[in-house]
Image (cartoon, rainbow, N blue to C red):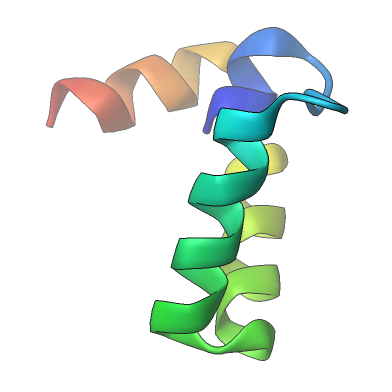
Length: 53
């Protein structure tokens, strides 16, 4: 969702890398990749609506 809001992934941000690593460990690589892609494909309007729910 953050990628959808910013329009790009944050490269080189340690906190983002740590969060992504923790999510990958919790979900598994394939599930994380699927959910990441789904969030990244959202429009800003969809991302904001998701956050509000």
